[in-house]
Image 1 (tube, rainbow, N blue to C red):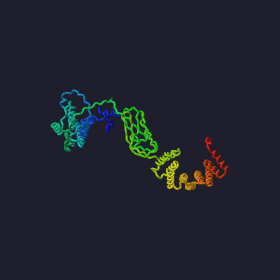
Image 2: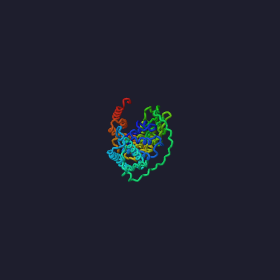
Image 3: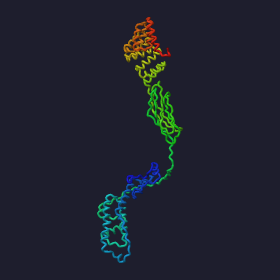
Image 4: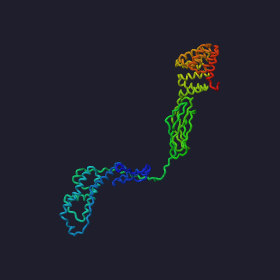
Length: 487
Protein backbone atom coordinates (compact mmCIF):
# COMPACT_ATOMS: atom_id res chain seq x y z
CA UNK A 1 0.00 0.00 0.00
CA UNK A 2 2.91 2.42 0.74
CA UNK A 3 4.50 1.79 -2.71
CA UNK A 4 1.43 1.64 -4.95
CA UNK A 5 -1.44 3.18 -2.93
CA UNK A 6 -3.48 -0.03 -3.32
CA UNK A 7 -4.18 -2.94 -0.97
CA UNK A 8 -3.41 -6.54 -2.05
CA UNK A 9 -7.12 -7.33 -1.58
CA UNK A 10 -9.98 -4.89 -2.18
CA UNK A 11 -13.76 -4.83 -1.94
CA UNK A 12 -16.13 -5.23 1.04
CA UNK A 13 -15.04 -6.62 4.39
CA UNK A 14 -16.28 -10.09 3.47
CA UNK A 15 -14.48 -9.97 0.10
CA UNK A 16 -11.22 -8.89 1.76
CA UNK A 17 -11.49 -11.72 4.31
CA UNK A 18 -12.23 -14.28 1.61
CA UNK A 19 -9.36 -12.91 -0.49
CA UNK A 20 -6.93 -13.49 2.37
CA UNK A 21 -8.30 -17.01 2.89
CA UNK A 22 -8.46 -18.26 -0.70
CA UNK A 23 -7.67 -15.54 -3.25
CA UNK A 24 -4.51 -14.24 -4.86
CA UNK A 25 -3.12 -10.79 -3.93
CA UNK A 26 -3.13 -8.09 -6.60
CA UNK A 27 0.58 -7.23 -7.08
CA UNK A 28 0.36 -5.87 -10.62
CA UNK A 29 1.43 -2.38 -9.53
CA UNK A 30 4.68 -3.62 -7.91
CA UNK A 31 7.95 -3.76 -9.88
CA UNK A 32 8.32 -7.09 -11.62
CA UNK A 33 11.47 -7.88 -9.64
CA UNK A 34 9.56 -7.63 -6.32
CA UNK A 35 6.33 -9.50 -7.12
CA UNK A 36 7.49 -13.06 -6.41
CA UNK A 37 9.24 -11.95 -3.20
CA UNK A 38 6.17 -10.09 -1.85
CA UNK A 39 3.84 -12.90 -2.98
CA UNK A 40 5.84 -15.35 -0.87
CA UNK A 41 5.66 -12.98 2.12
CA UNK A 42 1.84 -12.84 1.74
CA UNK A 43 1.35 -16.60 1.41
CA UNK A 44 -1.63 -17.71 3.50
CA UNK A 45 0.32 -20.75 4.79
CA UNK A 46 2.80 -19.49 7.41
CA UNK A 47 5.33 -22.25 6.69
CA UNK A 48 5.65 -21.09 3.05
CA UNK A 49 6.50 -17.51 3.93
CA UNK A 50 9.98 -16.09 4.46
CA UNK A 51 11.45 -17.61 7.63
CA UNK A 52 12.77 -14.26 8.86
CA UNK A 53 12.18 -10.57 8.14
CA UNK A 54 15.91 -10.20 7.41
CA UNK A 55 15.70 -12.80 4.63
CA UNK A 56 12.71 -10.98 3.17
CA UNK A 57 14.58 -7.64 3.18
CA UNK A 58 17.77 -9.19 1.75
CA UNK A 59 15.77 -10.68 -1.10
CA UNK A 60 14.13 -7.31 -1.85
CA UNK A 61 17.50 -5.51 -1.65
CA UNK A 62 19.19 -8.01 -4.00
CA UNK A 63 16.34 -7.86 -6.50
CA UNK A 64 16.32 -4.04 -6.45
CA UNK A 65 20.10 -3.75 -6.92
CA UNK A 66 20.09 -6.33 -9.71
CA UNK A 67 17.41 -4.30 -11.43
CA UNK A 68 19.44 -1.08 -10.99
CA UNK A 69 22.65 -2.67 -12.32
CA UNK A 70 20.87 -4.12 -15.33
CA UNK A 71 19.56 -0.64 -16.11
CA UNK A 72 23.06 0.88 -15.77
CA UNK A 73 25.17 -1.68 -17.70
CA UNK A 74 22.70 -2.63 -20.43
CA UNK A 75 22.98 -0.16 -23.31
CA UNK A 76 19.87 0.74 -25.22
CA UNK A 77 19.30 -1.60 -28.13
CA UNK A 78 20.81 -0.39 -31.41
CA UNK A 79 19.32 -1.20 -34.72
CA UNK A 80 21.10 -4.16 -36.26
CA UNK A 81 22.40 -3.18 -39.66
CA UNK A 82 21.59 -5.42 -42.55
CA UNK A 83 24.42 -7.80 -43.40
CA UNK A 84 25.56 -7.05 -46.88
CA UNK A 85 27.65 -9.56 -48.75
CA UNK A 86 31.11 -8.17 -48.88
CA UNK A 87 34.21 -9.36 -50.66
CA UNK A 88 36.37 -11.76 -48.79
CA UNK A 89 39.23 -9.33 -48.55
CA UNK A 90 37.06 -6.94 -46.50
CA UNK A 91 36.33 -9.66 -43.92
CA UNK A 92 39.96 -10.59 -43.52
CA UNK A 93 41.47 -7.14 -43.49
CA UNK A 94 39.95 -4.78 -40.97
CA UNK A 95 39.96 -1.12 -41.73
CA UNK A 96 42.92 0.37 -39.95
CA UNK A 97 41.26 3.73 -39.69
CA UNK A 98 38.26 2.32 -37.77
CA UNK A 99 40.17 0.27 -35.16
CA UNK A 100 41.16 3.17 -32.88
CA UNK A 101 37.64 4.53 -33.01
CA UNK A 102 36.19 1.13 -32.07
CA UNK A 103 38.59 0.77 -29.14
CA UNK A 104 37.78 4.30 -27.93
CA UNK A 105 34.09 3.67 -28.29
CA UNK A 106 34.39 0.49 -26.22
CA UNK A 107 36.11 2.34 -23.37
CA UNK A 108 33.70 5.29 -23.45
CA UNK A 109 30.54 3.25 -23.76
CA UNK A 110 31.36 0.27 -21.52
CA UNK A 111 34.38 0.36 -19.27
CA UNK A 112 34.13 3.91 -17.98
CA UNK A 113 30.40 3.81 -17.06
CA UNK A 114 30.84 0.34 -15.59
CA UNK A 115 33.73 1.50 -13.46
CA UNK A 116 31.86 4.54 -12.17
CA UNK A 117 28.73 2.50 -11.39
CA UNK A 118 30.71 -0.24 -9.70
CA UNK A 119 32.57 2.27 -7.58
CA UNK A 120 29.35 3.87 -6.35
CA UNK A 121 27.53 0.61 -5.80
CA UNK A 122 30.49 -0.97 -4.07
CA UNK A 123 30.10 1.44 -1.19
CA UNK A 124 26.76 -0.01 -0.20
CA UNK A 125 26.49 -3.57 -1.55
CA UNK A 126 27.58 -6.77 0.21
CA UNK A 127 29.93 -9.19 -1.51
CA UNK A 128 27.10 -11.58 -2.28
CA UNK A 129 25.58 -8.99 -4.59
CA UNK A 130 28.85 -8.56 -6.50
CA UNK A 131 28.62 -12.11 -7.70
CA UNK A 132 25.37 -11.23 -9.40
CA UNK A 133 26.97 -8.07 -10.85
CA UNK A 134 29.89 -10.08 -12.19
CA UNK A 135 27.58 -12.53 -13.84
CA UNK A 136 25.70 -9.66 -15.50
CA UNK A 137 28.99 -8.13 -16.70
CA UNK A 138 30.04 -11.46 -18.25
CA UNK A 139 26.74 -11.68 -20.06
CA UNK A 140 27.21 -8.10 -21.28
CA UNK A 141 30.66 -8.97 -22.65
CA UNK A 142 29.16 -11.94 -24.50
CA UNK A 143 26.44 -9.77 -25.99
CA UNK A 144 28.90 -7.08 -27.06
CA UNK A 145 31.13 -9.72 -28.58
CA UNK A 146 28.31 -11.37 -30.51
CA UNK A 147 27.35 -8.06 -32.08
CA UNK A 148 30.63 -7.90 -34.12
CA UNK A 149 30.46 -11.19 -35.97
CA UNK A 150 30.32 -9.45 -39.31
CA UNK A 151 33.69 -7.76 -38.78
CA UNK A 152 36.55 -9.11 -36.63
CA UNK A 153 37.30 -6.94 -33.61
CA UNK A 154 40.55 -5.02 -33.70
CA UNK A 155 43.30 -6.22 -31.42
CA UNK A 156 43.06 -4.89 -27.88
CA UNK A 157 45.90 -3.07 -26.21
CA UNK A 158 48.22 -5.25 -24.20
CA UNK A 159 46.94 -4.17 -20.73
CA UNK A 160 43.37 -4.80 -21.73
CA UNK A 161 44.25 -8.14 -23.34
CA UNK A 162 45.95 -9.23 -20.15
CA UNK A 163 42.86 -8.36 -18.11
CA UNK A 164 40.61 -10.21 -20.52
CA UNK A 165 42.86 -13.25 -20.39
CA UNK A 166 42.84 -13.11 -16.62
CA UNK A 167 39.05 -12.95 -16.52
CA UNK A 168 38.83 -15.91 -18.88
CA UNK A 169 41.20 -17.84 -16.65
CA UNK A 170 38.94 -17.12 -13.62
CA UNK A 171 35.41 -17.10 -15.05
CA UNK A 172 33.81 -17.39 -11.60
CA UNK A 173 35.28 -14.08 -10.33
CA UNK A 174 34.15 -10.60 -11.41
CA UNK A 175 36.61 -8.49 -13.33
CA UNK A 176 38.14 -5.74 -11.17
CA UNK A 177 37.54 -2.23 -12.40
CA UNK A 178 40.40 0.25 -11.83
CA UNK A 179 39.61 2.85 -9.20
CA UNK A 180 36.47 1.13 -7.92
CA UNK A 181 36.74 -2.27 -6.26
CA UNK A 182 40.49 -2.47 -5.84
CA UNK A 183 40.41 0.02 -2.96
CA UNK A 184 37.93 -1.99 -0.83
CA UNK A 185 38.68 -5.24 1.00
CA UNK A 186 36.49 -8.22 0.13
CA UNK A 187 33.45 -8.73 2.28
CA UNK A 188 32.60 -12.26 3.31
CA UNK A 189 28.95 -13.22 2.66
CA UNK A 190 26.80 -13.69 5.77
CA UNK A 191 25.83 -17.33 6.12
CA UNK A 192 22.14 -18.03 6.42
CA UNK A 193 21.26 -20.93 8.72
CA UNK A 194 19.22 -23.63 7.01
CA UNK A 195 15.53 -23.46 7.81
CA UNK A 196 13.49 -26.65 8.20
CA UNK A 197 10.79 -26.97 5.62
CA UNK A 198 7.54 -28.22 7.06
CA UNK A 199 4.97 -29.83 4.83
CA UNK A 200 2.24 -27.40 3.91
CA UNK A 201 -1.05 -28.16 5.65
CA UNK A 202 -4.02 -28.97 3.56
CA UNK A 203 -5.97 -25.84 2.73
CA UNK A 204 -9.62 -25.78 3.60
CA UNK A 205 -11.97 -25.04 0.78
CA UNK A 206 -13.88 -21.83 1.29
CA UNK A 207 -17.21 -21.26 -0.35
CA UNK A 208 -17.89 -17.61 -1.04
CA UNK A 209 -21.61 -18.23 -1.28
CA UNK A 210 -21.98 -20.05 2.07
CA UNK A 211 -24.28 -18.00 4.39
CA UNK A 212 -23.04 -17.03 7.85
CA UNK A 213 -25.46 -18.42 10.45
CA UNK A 214 -25.64 -16.46 13.72
CA UNK A 215 -27.22 -18.39 16.61
CA UNK A 216 -30.17 -16.54 18.17
CA UNK A 217 -29.36 -14.67 21.36
CA UNK A 218 -30.53 -11.67 23.37
CA UNK A 219 -28.74 -8.87 25.17
CA UNK A 220 -30.49 -6.73 27.80
CA UNK A 221 -29.32 -3.34 29.04
CA UNK A 222 -30.72 -1.01 31.68
CA UNK A 223 -29.73 1.44 34.41
CA UNK A 224 -26.67 0.68 36.49
CA UNK A 225 -28.77 0.95 39.68
CA UNK A 226 -32.48 1.03 40.52
CA UNK A 227 -33.37 4.01 42.73
CA UNK A 228 -36.91 3.53 44.08
CA UNK A 229 -38.94 5.35 46.75
CA UNK A 230 -41.83 4.14 48.84
CA UNK A 231 -45.12 5.66 47.80
CA UNK A 232 -43.94 6.47 44.29
CA UNK A 233 -43.90 4.86 40.84
CA UNK A 234 -40.56 4.78 39.02
CA UNK A 235 -40.30 4.18 35.27
CA UNK A 236 -37.25 2.17 34.21
CA UNK A 237 -36.02 2.21 30.58
CA UNK A 238 -34.66 -1.13 29.34
CA UNK A 239 -33.13 -1.90 25.93
CA UNK A 240 -33.12 -5.37 24.35
CA UNK A 241 -30.90 -6.30 21.37
CA UNK A 242 -31.81 -9.31 19.22
CA UNK A 243 -29.05 -11.32 17.53
CA UNK A 244 -29.89 -13.92 14.89
CA UNK A 245 -33.35 -14.96 13.84
CA UNK A 246 -35.73 -14.05 16.71
CA UNK A 247 -39.21 -13.30 15.42
CA UNK A 248 -41.26 -14.04 18.53
CA UNK A 249 -42.14 -11.27 21.02
CA UNK A 250 -39.63 -10.67 23.81
CA UNK A 251 -40.95 -10.44 27.37
CA UNK A 252 -39.07 -8.13 29.75
CA UNK A 253 -39.42 -8.11 33.53
CA UNK A 254 -37.55 -7.20 36.72
CA UNK A 255 -37.35 -9.96 39.34
CA UNK A 256 -35.92 -10.08 42.83
CA UNK A 257 -37.59 -6.95 44.27
CA UNK A 258 -39.55 -7.04 47.56
CA UNK A 259 -42.82 -8.97 47.36
CA UNK A 260 -45.04 -5.91 47.84
CA UNK A 261 -43.38 -4.04 44.94
CA UNK A 262 -45.40 -4.17 41.72
CA UNK A 263 -43.35 -5.05 38.60
CA UNK A 264 -45.51 -5.91 35.57
CA UNK A 265 -44.07 -7.66 32.48
CA UNK A 266 -43.69 -5.80 29.20
CA UNK A 267 -43.75 -7.48 25.74
CA UNK A 268 -41.64 -6.18 22.84
CA UNK A 269 -42.96 -6.95 19.37
CA UNK A 270 -40.68 -7.67 16.42
CA UNK A 271 -38.64 -4.58 15.59
CA UNK A 272 -39.04 -2.97 19.02
CA UNK A 273 -35.88 -2.56 21.09
CA UNK A 274 -36.79 -0.45 24.13
CA UNK A 275 -39.28 -0.98 26.93
CA UNK A 276 -40.38 1.05 29.92
CA UNK A 277 -41.34 -0.80 33.09
CA UNK A 278 -43.36 0.99 35.78
CA UNK A 279 -42.26 -0.15 39.26
CA UNK A 280 -44.67 0.89 42.02
CA UNK A 281 -43.62 0.78 45.68
CA UNK A 282 -46.33 0.99 48.37
CA UNK A 283 -46.20 4.00 50.65
CA UNK A 284 -46.36 2.29 54.01
CA UNK A 285 -43.10 0.36 53.84
CA UNK A 286 -39.60 1.01 55.19
CA UNK A 287 -36.52 1.42 53.03
CA UNK A 288 -34.50 -1.57 51.87
CA UNK A 289 -31.63 -2.57 49.53
CA UNK A 290 -30.72 -5.68 47.54
CA UNK A 291 -30.11 -6.96 44.01
CA UNK A 292 -32.67 -7.43 41.26
CA UNK A 293 -32.48 -9.25 37.92
CA UNK A 294 -33.55 -7.82 34.58
CA UNK A 295 -34.77 -10.65 32.35
CA UNK A 296 -35.50 -10.75 28.61
CA UNK A 297 -36.95 -14.01 27.23
CA UNK A 298 -38.26 -15.17 23.86
CA UNK A 299 -39.06 -18.87 23.75
CA UNK A 300 -35.95 -20.80 24.77
CA UNK A 301 -33.69 -17.75 24.27
CA UNK A 302 -33.08 -15.85 27.47
CA UNK A 303 -30.81 -13.07 28.75
CA UNK A 304 -30.33 -11.82 32.30
CA UNK A 305 -28.36 -9.11 34.05
CA UNK A 306 -28.11 -8.35 37.76
CA UNK A 307 -28.35 -4.81 39.12
CA UNK A 308 -28.45 -3.39 42.67
CA UNK A 309 -31.56 -1.61 43.91
CA UNK A 310 -32.39 0.66 46.82
CA UNK A 311 -35.89 1.49 48.10
CA UNK A 312 -35.78 4.80 49.93
CA UNK A 313 -38.32 5.38 52.71
CA UNK A 314 -41.28 7.57 51.79
CA UNK A 315 -40.84 11.30 52.05
CA UNK A 316 -42.31 13.09 55.05
CA UNK A 317 -44.46 15.27 52.81
CA UNK A 318 -46.01 12.27 51.04
CA UNK A 319 -46.70 10.53 54.35
CA UNK A 320 -48.20 13.67 55.86
CA UNK A 321 -50.51 14.10 52.86
CA UNK A 322 -51.56 10.49 53.14
CA UNK A 323 -52.19 10.80 56.89
CA UNK A 324 -54.23 14.01 56.58
CA UNK A 325 -56.34 12.51 53.77
CA UNK A 326 -57.13 9.52 55.98
CA UNK A 327 -57.85 11.81 58.96
CA UNK A 328 -60.40 13.86 56.98
CA UNK A 329 -62.43 10.79 56.00
CA UNK A 330 -62.34 9.38 59.52
CA UNK A 331 -59.65 6.73 59.02
CA UNK A 332 -57.72 7.69 62.12
CA UNK A 333 -55.82 4.40 62.36
CA UNK A 334 -54.38 4.83 58.87
CA UNK A 335 -53.54 8.45 59.66
CA UNK A 336 -51.75 7.46 62.86
CA UNK A 337 -49.70 4.84 60.95
CA UNK A 338 -48.52 7.45 58.44
CA UNK A 339 -47.56 9.95 61.15
CA UNK A 340 -45.81 7.22 63.15
CA UNK A 341 -43.69 6.35 60.09
CA UNK A 342 -42.60 9.97 59.76
CA UNK A 343 -41.71 10.27 63.44
CA UNK A 344 -39.79 6.99 63.42
CA UNK A 345 -37.19 8.55 61.11
CA UNK A 346 -37.61 12.14 62.36
CA UNK A 347 -38.81 12.27 66.00
CA UNK A 348 -38.76 16.08 66.08
CA UNK A 349 -40.94 16.68 63.05
CA UNK A 350 -43.32 19.31 64.50
CA UNK A 351 -45.90 18.97 61.73
CA UNK A 352 -46.15 15.19 62.17
CA UNK A 353 -46.38 15.60 65.97
CA UNK A 354 -49.18 18.12 65.67
CA UNK A 355 -51.14 16.01 63.15
CA UNK A 356 -50.66 12.84 65.19
CA UNK A 357 -51.95 14.70 68.27
CA UNK A 358 -55.06 15.68 66.33
CA UNK A 359 -55.59 12.03 65.27
CA UNK A 360 -55.20 10.90 68.89
CA UNK A 361 -57.75 13.56 69.99
CA UNK A 362 -60.13 12.31 67.29
CA UNK A 363 -59.82 8.78 68.67
CA UNK A 364 -60.17 10.10 72.26
CA UNK A 365 -56.57 9.18 73.05
CA UNK A 366 -56.39 12.31 75.18
CA UNK A 367 -53.15 11.71 77.15
CA UNK A 368 -51.29 10.77 73.95
CA UNK A 369 -52.73 13.81 72.20
CA UNK A 370 -51.72 16.13 75.05
CA UNK A 371 -48.18 14.65 75.00
CA UNK A 372 -47.81 15.34 71.27
CA UNK A 373 -49.00 18.96 71.61
CA UNK A 374 -46.73 19.55 74.58
CA UNK A 375 -43.80 18.23 72.50
CA UNK A 376 -44.69 20.60 69.69
CA UNK A 377 -44.69 23.56 72.07
CA UNK A 378 -41.28 22.55 73.37
CA UNK A 379 -39.99 22.75 69.81
CA UNK A 380 -41.86 26.01 69.08
CA UNK A 381 -43.52 27.83 72.00
CA UNK A 382 -45.04 30.39 69.62
CA UNK A 383 -47.10 27.90 67.64
CA UNK A 384 -50.62 29.34 68.09
CA UNK A 385 -52.40 26.33 66.55
CA UNK A 386 -50.63 23.96 68.98
CA UNK A 387 -51.88 26.08 71.91
CA UNK A 388 -55.42 25.95 70.46
CA UNK A 389 -55.23 22.15 70.04
CA UNK A 390 -53.91 21.78 73.56
CA UNK A 391 -56.99 23.75 74.75
CA UNK A 392 -59.26 21.29 72.90
CA UNK A 393 -57.67 18.35 74.71
CA UNK A 394 -57.87 20.11 78.11
CA UNK A 395 -61.55 20.94 77.58
CA UNK A 396 -62.27 17.28 76.56
CA UNK A 397 -60.54 16.20 79.76
CA UNK A 398 -62.82 18.61 81.79
CA UNK A 399 -59.94 20.94 82.64
CA UNK A 400 -61.70 24.21 81.70
CA UNK A 401 -59.15 26.40 83.42
CA UNK A 402 -56.32 24.71 81.55
CA UNK A 403 -58.29 24.97 78.33
CA UNK A 404 -58.98 28.72 78.80
CA UNK A 405 -55.27 29.26 79.50
CA UNK A 406 -54.32 27.49 76.27
CA UNK A 407 -56.97 29.34 74.21
CA UNK A 408 -55.96 32.70 75.64
CA UNK A 409 -52.33 32.08 74.58
CA UNK A 410 -53.49 31.15 71.09
CA UNK A 411 -55.59 34.35 70.83
CA UNK A 412 -52.65 36.41 72.06
CA UNK A 413 -50.33 34.93 69.42
CA UNK A 414 -52.96 35.21 66.64
CA UNK A 415 -55.64 37.76 67.58
CA UNK A 416 -57.21 37.79 64.10
CA UNK A 417 -58.15 34.11 64.18
CA UNK A 418 -61.94 33.73 64.54
CA UNK A 419 -61.73 29.99 65.35
CA UNK A 420 -59.54 30.55 68.40
CA UNK A 421 -62.06 33.07 69.83
CA UNK A 422 -64.98 30.75 69.10
CA UNK A 423 -63.27 27.84 70.92
CA UNK A 424 -62.58 30.04 73.95
CA UNK A 425 -66.22 31.28 73.91
CA UNK A 426 -67.43 27.66 73.98
CA UNK A 427 -65.26 27.01 77.03
CA UNK A 428 -66.59 30.19 78.70
CA UNK A 429 -70.13 28.84 78.19
CA UNK A 430 -69.17 25.51 79.77
CA UNK A 431 -67.63 27.41 82.69
CA UNK A 432 -70.87 29.48 83.12
CA UNK A 433 -69.29 32.74 81.98
CA UNK A 434 -71.88 33.81 79.32
CA UNK A 435 -70.90 37.50 79.22
CA UNK A 436 -67.29 36.64 78.35
CA UNK A 437 -68.51 34.07 75.89
CA UNK A 438 -70.70 36.68 74.18
CA UNK A 439 -67.72 39.02 73.87
CA UNK A 440 -65.62 36.38 72.10
CA UNK A 441 -68.53 35.43 69.79
CA UNK A 442 -69.09 39.06 68.79
CA UNK A 443 -65.38 39.39 67.94
CA UNK A 444 -65.38 36.13 66.01
CA UNK A 445 -68.35 37.30 63.89
CA UNK A 446 -66.68 40.64 63.35
CA UNK A 447 -63.65 38.82 61.95
CA UNK A 448 -65.84 36.42 59.92
CA UNK A 449 -69.49 37.53 59.46
CA UNK A 450 -70.33 34.27 57.67
CA UNK A 451 -69.17 32.08 60.57
CA UNK A 452 -72.38 30.02 60.93
CA UNK A 453 -71.40 28.11 64.08
CA UNK A 454 -70.59 31.41 65.80
CA UNK A 455 -74.06 32.78 64.85
CA UNK A 456 -75.80 29.74 66.34
CA UNK A 457 -73.67 29.91 69.51
CA UNK A 458 -74.41 33.65 69.93
CA UNK A 459 -78.17 33.04 69.47
CA UNK A 460 -78.01 30.52 72.30
CA UNK A 461 -76.12 33.04 74.44
CA UNK A 462 -78.81 35.69 73.76
CA UNK A 463 -81.45 33.16 74.81
CA UNK A 464 -79.68 32.66 78.14
CA UNK A 465 -79.52 36.42 78.73
CA UNK A 466 -83.20 36.92 77.67
CA UNK A 467 -82.57 38.88 74.47
CA UNK A 468 -85.05 37.00 72.23
CA UNK A 469 -84.95 39.51 69.40
CA UNK A 470 -81.19 39.29 69.02
CA UNK A 471 -81.38 35.50 69.29
CA UNK A 472 -83.97 35.28 66.47
CA UNK A 473 -81.90 37.59 64.26
CA UNK A 474 -78.82 35.37 64.65
CA UNK A 475 -80.81 32.24 63.89
CA UNK A 476 -82.28 33.80 60.73
CA UNK A 477 -78.79 34.79 59.59
CA UNK A 478 -77.51 31.26 60.26
CA UNK A 479 -80.37 29.71 58.25
CA UNK A 480 -79.61 31.97 55.29
CA UNK A 481 -76.05 30.64 55.29
CA UNK A 482 -77.21 27.01 55.05
CA UNK A 483 -77.41 25.39 51.59
CA UNK A 484 -80.91 25.24 50.09
CA UNK A 485 -81.18 21.47 50.39
CA UNK A 486 -80.23 21.38 54.08
CA UNK A 487 -82.77 23.93 55.42
